[in-house]
Length: 314
Image 1 (cartoon, rainbow, N blue to C red):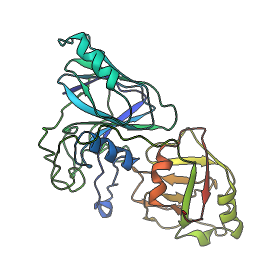
Image 2: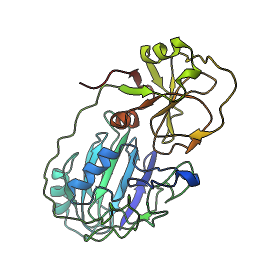
Image 3: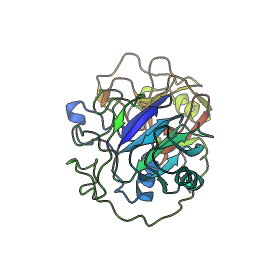
């Protein structure tokens, strides 16, 4: 069991989401930076799809009622393991655990100890995996918190208690929540050096409604830069910059949306959809961010500058 002493600005339980329900109006949700969650799970011997904690701007304090293996990936934060106020274990155990704790490594948190996380040096979202996974109650096969529909566990708050699954694996029946079998293996890695910040350049493909914009709009999108708005969230990254001018008036009937869709409301300021995007939308989509660059978009923080390019990766 893990007790949330302080959740930081915003923290949720996330796995790889609940795909296959868009026709019912249910977003996929899941980790905004899925590769980071996958890596954290691998570091502690979990199946990649087990649920962990997604922290926005870090700042969380967590008490481990039972000892357990943990790993942190994504936006890098300062990490400390401290004896808890109710800790019954020796202080030396917490001191040794704290010396080994850090980003991109599996580390042991003794029973009763507190895991204290700082704010990211860069990036926005940090992922915490614990061996056995966070065993919140699954909804439609996933333990993910969906900030748009309200499905899944509530955002974490002080005093919340999070059950941890057994080492034998995940018991959810969904294909994404437990990667089918959800097995937990032995810990075979002791270090996975995390990459530094990637250039804030998002590769895009032409969108299905690029004909709704003037010929200059595509050039304006690539000219940039755009600045990330403070109104961004797990639904989408809101940007301000060169206006994308429409060639057609009126609005579209609602149509299906995907993660990475660059939707343009009447203001002409684009929105890049993330994990909790709505299944449908009525604003035209001028471009779609490639799946490989969605983790870059997920780590953009308010005030960051970002550019778009149609050039393929080399």
